[in-house]
Amino acid sequence: MCLIGNCCKLRVACIDAPEKKQALGIESRDYLRSLLAKNPNKLIVVEKEREGYGRMVAEIFIPTGKGDEEIPISGMMIKEGMAYYYAQYSKNCSDNAEQYAQLEKEAQKKKIGVWKYNGLKPWEYRKANR
Image (cartoon, rainbow, N blue to C red; front, top):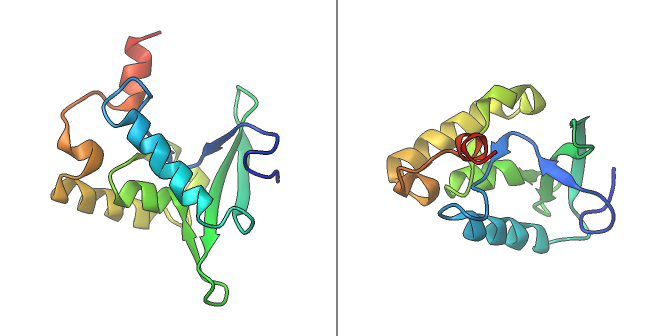
């Protein structure tokens, strides 16, 4: 485990957000930063794996202050349409995979965030821009 912003590069498990040059890329990044800033000293980082680029892949949770209750950052990003549920890597979030898939369906239905646009998914964008 490492502290966010202190020393390591980290990829949030189970989601893929727009790249900075894509529509909503900066907004997505800023939304994530705002979530992390809500309670930076109490974030729970659960490492899932190390990827080929040396980054930690982790689920990040924010304690609600109500006992052991925690809110997953990935779920919040998906719910607000600021990221896609990355189903092909759902092994990293098996406990929450069903919830994330449902949150994505709701965001799609509401046409919020990334679902307002008919653009390339981030993984398609990266492939096209290699």
